[in-house]
Length: 240
Image (cartoon, rainbow, N blue to C red; front, top):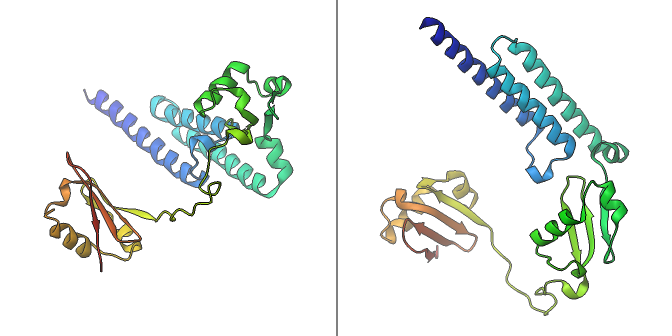
């Protein structure tokens, strides 16, 4: 019984260590969305994650060695990120360059092969991006992160307000001031308001319990939009 508890405690401790180290290294390496990751970033992330899992699972191995290995991987990633920011040649070598897959409506089969991409995958990406007829495209470019950018033919571009000589009003900054009943004090302060101001105006609308609010937003024009559970949106124009 004691041995089992010691084993569980050891696994728990190693798991906590791996999570803490993983969190610290992630912060040092910088946050990126999945779509922004290069293939090298992805490989580094997989390697560090695998080592972190081994720390928790393999209790016979030294967790210090694993932590050092994770640090080395993270250090290499940070150094390469710095180098690619400073040197265009290094960036091209390490992260690659954009590849044109469709040029003036013509599919470049050689570039598809070079990118390890086939026509079916290209057609799938076209459909996902809203282009169901490849003839509507002027260019398709594979970016270094693996995503594909599309440029439609001029006649197939969506009409904009500028095309119609319209001048729509500029969208305003909207801040989330309440989320799931929790007041976002920093967001309120950024909008020049405080909790007392918010609660006062909610009370005027017979909203006495902020916990009933799923979401409340405030824009630059003092439009307070409140979303209550199971009810329609309430939009308040506050003049003060």
